[in-house]
Image: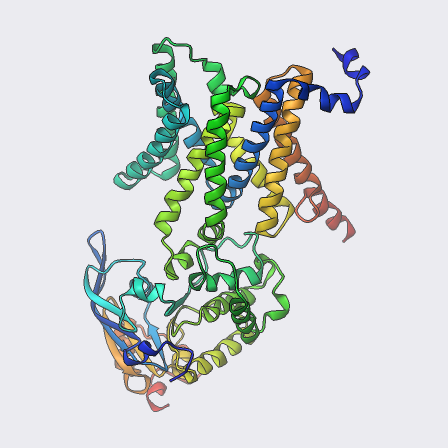
Amino acid sequence: MSEFLISITPIDWLLDPLTHDFMRRALMVSALVGGVCGLLSCYMTLKGWALMGDAVSHAVMPGVVVAYALGLPFSLGAFVFGVGSVALIGFVKQKSRIKEDTVIGLVFTGFFALGLVLVSKIKSNIDLMQILFGSPLGISRSDVNQTLIISFIVIFILLIFRKDLMLYCFDAKHARSIGINTGMLHYLLLTLLSLSAVVGLQTVGIILVVAMLITPGATAYLLTDRFDKMTLLAVISSSFSSILGVYISYWSDIETGGSIVLVQTVIFLIAFLFAPRYGILKNQTFINNN
Amino acid sequence: MNPIFKSHEKDFMRIEADQVCVDYNGTVALYDASLNLKAGSICGLVGMNGAGKSTFFKALMGFVRPSRGKIRINGLKVNQAQKEQSVAYVPQNEGIDYSFPVSVWDVVMMGRYGAMNIFRIPRESDRRAVVHALERVDLLDLRERPIGSLSGGQRKRAFLARAIAQRASVLLLDEPFSGVDVPTEKLMAELFLQFRQEGHTILISTHDLNHVRDFCDFVVLINKTVLAYGETSEVFTSENLNKTFGGIPPNPLSGPASSKDFINE
């Protein structure tokens, strides 16, 4: 394999996968999903909803299984359970004295366990590994269509409400004081989270989708002090990671979801070390100079 | 009457609170609080910590729903007044994430969101309002700076500018002088007097009796309810202050002055 890698030119490395139909599909879907999740990740990191992202992405598991078993679009089942988990978290938190992070952990593991049990009980052609780890290389045409539709819904809503959601993340009290319906924004953001988790699990699977929903935002946050720039950087780094991850996965024959998230993590580490203003090496130089 | 206000606003009391009660899960935080403020006045809301100042503010801003009583701002219900951009709120800001990636300009522009269309795209008039607000708090030169890079006093001024940009006739300020430097304090005090001149109505919550004496026309003394309300010279008696602070009158003026002096001012 390594001899083979050395013998190909970078142009071949880029173009050869494009001769396959499944690779073109995988690259397109991954780039789109990367962009959508990257966009949302800005709001997740700024609002401090990383754990909520983890919860929702795990909680969609039984929904996917049930939808497959009933022959419904998997995204529908995932969405219902994603929103359901959020509602349940809110309900338990309000009605008990348990702290929020505990409630979140409790609800999402419960849902995830239910999903596992359902998979083992419903003997159908559901591939557990595909749900858990995603499989962009094996994505079907109907799944591509679902992903396209959901992605465009999320992008459309975020384009309309991006300023309101930004204000909601920054200063919800002020938003309320100027007559903006913050309750609506709260649930809108949670709905977008559920939808993004649904498309994200296509490419990297349930377990790693939370990375898609926080890592690009965290990386971009280290690189800029402007919200618009942050969203742009998050989208670019996220889509780039997805594309590069798929390529690496193709040529090295490694697991695609892991490959994508690993690329994202490496980009984050580079930003963490070398970001112009907020990288740790920058601080080091600063201290040395003094 | 200042022409910036909408015509229907002039007929009403700016702030009207009638026997407002607020309780949190059965614990009474405020009861029978009444207040009437007319246009062009500055009113100090004075009380100890936990006396219900913040609760009263929250009720006036619609953040908590009174269990009894009614509140009107410019004759409108609170949520309507907010939609009309008639009331601006300057919080204490302890809950703000100052590493949020927004510039001073962005923050002040947030004051204009309510007046914009759904996409919140600033028009020329919005930009002018922001420039004007930044000029008044003397932050125009720092408009491109990230909000987190400002000093404490500058941050206070930025959030005050956001309220100014909103062009509301009623301003509610929660402890505006806590933790500010002397130049900022001076600038804010001058601004408040200008606002009054322009016909704004300002309600300031504070525990600093100096400020009340210096520029508040009216004062509300509060301890779970309104103990006394009226013109500052009449209400600021040592007896009232004793009641407000539970027999331990604070002595804000170091040196020979005491609360007695307020009466004679």
